[in-house]
Length: 106
Image (cartoon, rainbow, N blue to C red):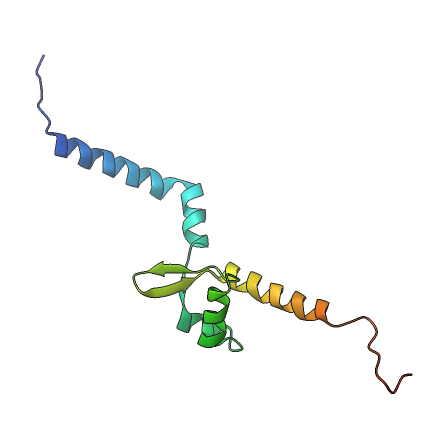
C-alpha cells in the first residue's frame, strides 16, 4: 500500500470545495439567498417614493424598522419595509374613531 501524505491546508481546501458544492446544489440554501436580498436606503426610497431618509431614520431609532448594518451603510429587506408600512397604516386606521362627533352634531 502506498501512503499519501496530504497537508492540512489541502484538506481544508477540499472540505471548503465540498461545502460550496453542497450549498450550490441545495434548494434550501438557494431559497434563503433569494429571500435575503438587501436594499440600500436609496433603493428603498426609489421603490417607495412616500418614504424619505428622515422617516426611515426615525423608524430605525424608534425600533419599528429592522435594519442590517454593513460597515456604515444601512440595508433593508423589502419584507421588513412592507411590514413597517402595514403597521403604520393599521395605526392610522385604528386611531380614527368609529363615529366622529363634533359640536355641530349636538
